[in-house]
Structures are given as C-alpha cells and as structure tokens.
Image (cartoon, rainbow, N blue to C red; front, side, top):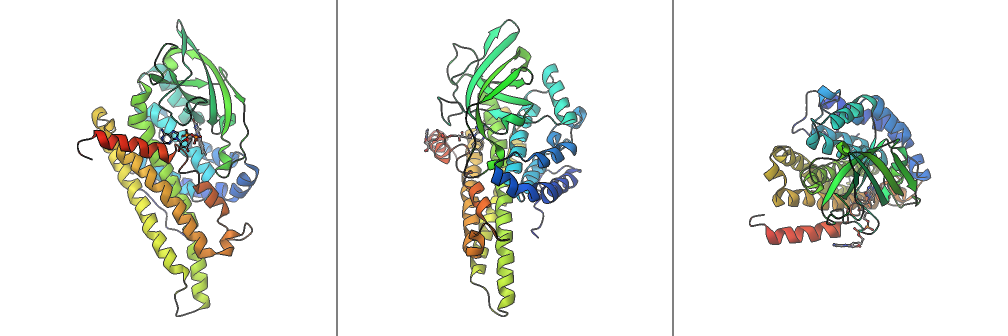
Length: 395
Ligand SMILES: Cc1cc2nc3c(=O)[nH]c(=O)nc-3n(C[C@H](O)[C@H](O)[C@H](O)COP(=O)(O)OP(=O)(O)OC[C@H]3O[C@@H](n4cnc5c(N)ncnc54)[C@H](O)[C@@H]3O)c2cc1C
C-alpha cells in the first residue's frame, strides 16, 4: 500500500482525520465504482454522496459558517487521496473546492454569500464552473456573454462548451463581461443557482479520459439579483485565488493518479523479484526513475501550497507575476510528470498493464492523465509565462 500522502505544511488539527476520511471514501466508495464510472461515462454519484454526507463538500468553509475550516494543505491532500482511487471523483471534488475557495477568499461578509457559504457547509451544495465559452476557446480571460442589469436584477446567457457535472449541480460560478458595453476582458463572476438557472445540454461527453466528470456543453441561462455578483473583478479573483487553487488541487489529484500507477508497478516488480530471488527485475530501474518524478510533484505541490497561503492575504503579493509564474510552473510540471509516470508504470507492467482485464491495468489512469495538459492548455500557459518572463525584473 502506498503511504498516505499528507501535505503537511499548514494542516489544521482536524486535517489528518479529514484526509483519512477522504482516503476511506476513495478506497471504499470511489475506487470500487471507478471502472463503471469510466466505462459508462457516468457521474460518480456514490463518491460525491459520501463526500457530501461527511461534510467534505464544505471542507474549506470556515467553521463559523458550519464548515470544517480545512486548510489548503488539507484540501490538496484530500484531492490526492481521492485521485488515487477515482480520477473523475477527485476532479469533481477539486473543481468544486476551487469555486468554494473563490467565495471564501473574496465574498465573506455580504449577506448573499454568507448564506451561500452556510448552505454549502450544511447541505453540501455542489458548485460547477463556467469559464470557457464558445467564441473565445480556452482563453478564460475574455468573455463574449455579458451581465444584463435591470434595476436590482440581472439576466445572463452563456454558450458554454464545457461545464463539468453541470447536470448534477445546484450552483454555477459563471464568468461574463460586467455589462453589454464592457470590454471582453472586463469580467465578473456571477453566482447562479437553481431554480433561476437552466442548463440546456448541447453536446455529449464521450471523451478519452476523465469520463466521470460528465463535461458536456450547455446553453446556460440565469436570472438573479445583483448581490449574486462577486464584488471583485474576475481578473483579481482569478489571479489571487482561482488560478493558484486550480493548479494546486489539480496537481494534487494528478499526484494521486501517479501514486496509483506506481503502486501497480511496484507490486508487479515485487512479484517479479520473488520469482527470481537474488536478482533485481529490469522494471525496478524504471520504477526508481519514476520515484524521482513523483517526489518532484509532491515537493512542488507542498511548496505551492506554502507560497499561496503565505501570500493570499496580501493583495499585492497574491497578484504578483512571480506567484503566477510559480503556479503556472506547478501546472506545467505536474501535468507532464503525471503522464510520464503512468507511461513508465506501463513500461514496467508491460502487457499486464496494457490489458483492460488485469489487476495491473493502466488504461484508465493513462487516459485520465492525458487530460492534465489540456485543462487550460499547456500551450496557453507557456505562452503566458513567456510574456510574464519578459515583464518581470527578477524571476
Ligand atoms: C476534463 C475536463 C473538464 C473541464 N471542465 C471545465 C469546466 O467545468 N468549465 C469550464 O469552463 N471549462 C472546463 N474545461 C475546459 C478546459 O479547461 C479548457 O479551457 C478547454 O478544454 C480548452 O479547450 P481547447 O483545448 O479547445 O481550447 P484552446 O485552449 O483554445 O486550445 C486549442 C488549440 O489552440 C491552441 N491555442 C489557442 N490559443 C493559444 C494561445 N494563445 N497560445 C497557445 N496556444 C493556443 C492550443 O495549443 C490548442 O492546440 C474542461 C476540460 C477538460 C479536459
């Protein structure tokens, strides 16, 4: 069994028990359903229900709203724990926590969002994200759609190419231009919720991997009151919270995928070693190489959590190009390493890993790992880093 990865810096007193709970849900609920979730491209209902009933959908919500008050280190460790058993369930959990983080960090103290935080904590509302849009591709920092205000009320319509688990959510955080005459980059985040939200599916989801995220496209239409609009501009929320927390939680769950793959390779090598006592099986060398990469992801996640937590309450530091570069580098490195590690595990296990009907099967993990470089395309992130490096004095 792989030792439980706990991102230790900044864990709360209840952190280890909550991470253990996520690991148990992964092992007993998400893992046993993972192949079915993948085969049918179905939502991991049982895992999300278990997380909800244990209050883990409200893990990040402060205790005074009824949440668990978990730290970002705890959340990252929960993502890793779930990622070890079902990548899709872990990704749903991660994407939900990213939305919660934006509310926790930027909306506390307003009546609408205080009520929302309380509802997330007490009834486990599940939140999705609609940042990408038909017409702008993966460029999340520009929107076609806009908020239309009429007195205290707004309406909003967005053609979203992908809203993961949209069919199963209570709430969506949507990006849009502030008003019909605003520039494409002058965006806000709007909290929209049922019953004043309709999501009309306009694509299907038959994808290579992360099949249980059910990431279909929707025509989103919503109405509401202006207190549902996040007070800070999207650019600021994105730079200070959404982007760092996305890259931390994604990298953490990719670490879980990598650990699952290497665990199969390790068992395979140990079994081969027992058959030929006194000699080191050829796969062991690959296994040792992959351990270098997995340790690198662990170190990167830990240091990113530390850096994010240290800077998040200092607006200048949190919006700095330096932090953006660091978080982008975490995403680039972890997304490449996870794929390399799963491929190495396949090299070690050979045909046993290639088969879909073997205990060493790596097909699902390999397909899931391929999503890492596309979820916000690495090409875009590298291009963004290139322009940041031209601008910063000291990287
Ligand atoms: C499993 C999964 C779940 C997702 N869930 C959600 C969700 O819940 N909500 C949501 O809003 N989105 C979601 N997404 C969307 C995702 O985050 C990406 O934004 C989206 O997949 C981008 O699509 P794209 O690759 O077609 O677009 P692009 O990023 O536009 O890339 C398309 C191609 O254009 C190239 N390209 C375009 N512009 C540039 C540039 N400036 N620099 C460099 N290369 C460029 C890229 O190299 C690539 O070849 C999800 C994606 C996946 C895989």
